[in-house]
Length: 342
Image (cartoon, rainbow, N blue to C red; front, side):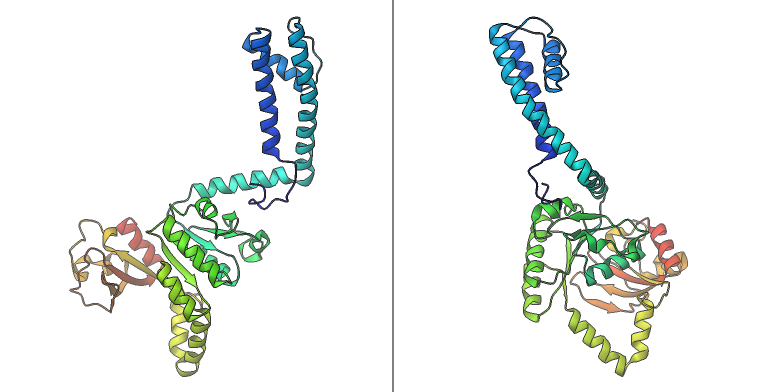
């Protein structure tokens, strides 16, 4: 447990020390009850004053068997007390107890999340993903082994929820709340690690939307077969982006603008059929009055088969399993979400 939490390996285990103290108290209490026929309260009192070495007198005279038993317990308690004291002192001096408290607090925050996104790795791509999710107000949890990567100025005024561990381990994914998450993004440097994470995540939560980065076409194909919803090749996208800046600079700048790269307030939203109130289901875009309600525009219609119809006409109707792609300013998007209560 200590190693997984990122603490230095040590023979002084705080949890083990606590178990030793409670175990010796229990053994001594039960021993006095059976050997000396003490009451449970008297036996417990004797066990506590023995392990604490305060030196109070006996509750009642001991028999020879009781004295032998107590002599053995005193010798044992000296060792237990010394180990417990050394462990507690180490954790206080080294600051480990505060690390444990911080991790307990952080885990409690993570456990309270639902419908969040898990980011595996906080490198160049992971930080960029976190920045966008932060701007969009989407909850997320970062899984990272090197916690120093979380200490960057951009997030100093924002509490980044994290799990300290290796994202390729199932128990770490569970700590990040994978069963309650809606999405997972993995952008580790090693494609094999990304593949392992995709396989584990898909098994732990089959409904999870999984996005992975890859460094080769071959890896992309394997990741898709493993269950990734989308696989991004950063070099390919970067090359396309730079080439398009030469041939169509205006189009690229507009795309950057609407995707908030140039400090715009334009946002996108996907409205699924199951998110619509009953009063809007089965209605055409014209009769849904989305523009009148919030000012947004429908720019795309995603069918159940995953195909898109750009700029659907006013008579388009949303069916089960389908969704509309909406564009508008951030206040308009917020007004739409409030109107639909999503």
